[in-house]
Amino acid sequence: MLTERDMQELSILASKLFVEGYDVTDIKDILSAERAKINAAAMTDLINYFPITNNTGVKLSKINYGYNKLVLNTEISLERVSGVFDINSKPSMFEDILRNALYNCLKDIKQAYTDEVNELNPVPTPTTIITASTTNPISFTIGSNVLYTEVGTIDTALAWTVVDIKDSSGTSIDGSSTSATASAPLALEVTDGTNTLTFSITSGTYDGTTIIGNNVVLAGGV
Image (cartoon, rainbow, N blue to C red; front, side, top):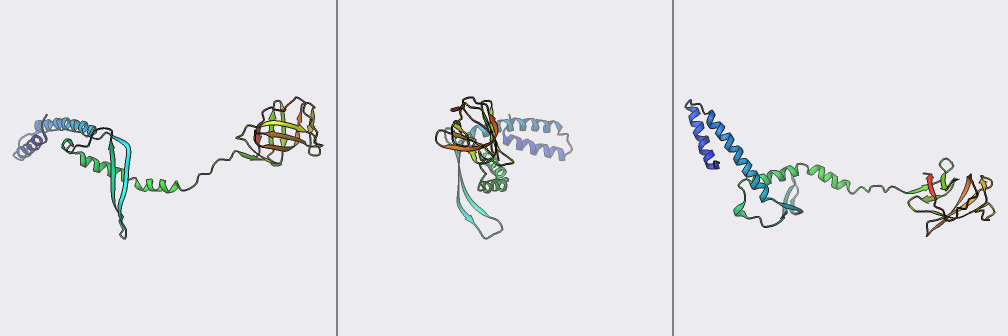
């Protein structure tokens, strides 16, 4: 494989011969093949010289304001996986390649800056709390029973179980079938183990099976 010096000398020779009217096609083919070999070897050397980790440090040591261009004096530290960046084994094209790589990264700095600004905008946290209304009642499915309330809120992220079910007079009716109406609502008490909530059940039929301690499946509401 030719060296860079050999390539330069052969290129100069080809140019002189071409000016003198000689056919230099073969020389150009040799130059092209040798250039491919040199580039392949250079690529290997460049990759092997730059095995860096993701630990990249950036420090703005100075920013010059007051001009139409913002001048940044930046210190960038790149950590090698192992070994050191030995200047004596540095590939000849390393600094040019690194400069171009940094330039390509900085071409997207406007978008990166915008993305950083957008991080300041709080993302709404999806709520798991539902609220009942006349148009969007909350349903409590307990076994084969489906009971509805039009008033109250509850967190669907928690596991709820039945404490008791009572009639409009406050008497437990667990084990006694009945239907709920707006004029004669049932009171359904549920707990998540810490909090106990009571809901006025205005529609739905309780079939009389024992439901104390049963799990509750929630739906509806907004």
